[in-house]
Amino acid sequence: MAEGQRRQTAAVLAAGLVICAGATGCSGGGAAAQDARAATDPVQTLRQAPDALREAGSAQARTSMEMATGGTRVTIRGEGGYDFRRQRGRLTVVLPQDPTGTPEHQPITELLAPGALFMKNRGAGVPADKWVRVETATLSDGNLVTGGATDPYAAAEVLRGTRTADFVGDTQVAGVAVRHYRGTADLALAARSASASDAAALRAAAKGFATAEVPFDVYLDDQGRVRKLRQRFAFVNGRRENTVAVFATTLLYAFGTPVNVTLPEAKDIYTGRIAAP
Image (cartoon, rainbow, N blue to C red; front, side, top):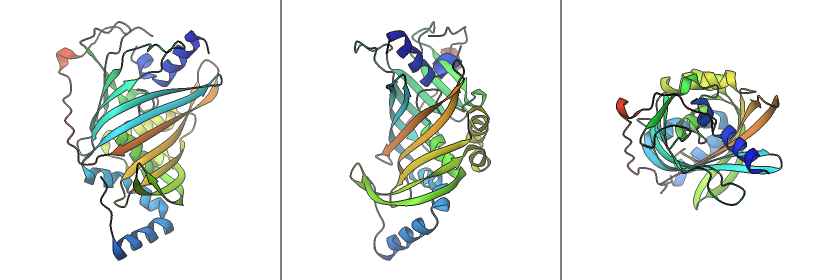
C-alpha cells in the first residue's frame, strides 16, 4: 500500500483525528450453579457483565482496532487503565507505522470520561501542550471507533443490548479460566439500558453506523467480568459508499489496580481550528 493511502486508512480508523476539525474464582457448588446459568441463559448473563465491571472497580486495559483495506490490515493499539465506577480512563494510543517502519505520529494520550474524549499530541495544528476535547454524543459512532480505541466501559455496555448469544465453551485468556460466548448486540437496545453517560453516545452510534447490530465474542471470568471482548462495527466509507468493518478488541486484567485520571482544566483545552491530517 502506498504511504499516502495508508495514512488515509489510519485517519479513517482514528476518525476523531479528522472529526475534531488476578481473578479469584468461585468453587464448589456455587461455581457449578453459575456455569449452569451461563450455559442456559447466556443473554441475561451478558447483559449483566457491565455491572460486574463496576463492582470490580478498575482494571488495566489493552485495546486494538483493526480494519482491512486494499489487502492490508491496519491496526491501532492502546494501553492504559480504566476506573469503571467513575467511568474514567487513560490510554496511550499508537498509530500504525508508515511503509518504511517509521512512526507517522507520536503516541496520542487519550482521557476517557463520561460524555467526553480528550486527546493530547493531536497534531495537525494543535499546540503540543494542549488537549482537544470532543463530546462523544456528537460523534456519529458515539466514540466506539472515533479515537482509535473503544472506551472499555462503553464497549461492555454494548453487551446490555445482547439479543442473541450462545455459550461456546470453557477456555483461557492470559492464563485465566474464562467462559466464551458468541452473539449479536443491538446498539439501540443497549442505549435503553446503559448508564446515562453512555446512553446518548450509543444512540448516536445506533444511527450513525451502517447497522445497529454488533456481532461479538466475549470471555467472562468466574466473577462475570469481561476479560476479552471482540466486537465488529460497520460504518459507511463516505468516499467509496461501501460498508467497512472495524474490529475492536478490549483486554482487561489486573482488576483493582488504582487508576487516577485528572481531566484537563479549561485553560489547557485547545479551542482553535483543527486541520485535517
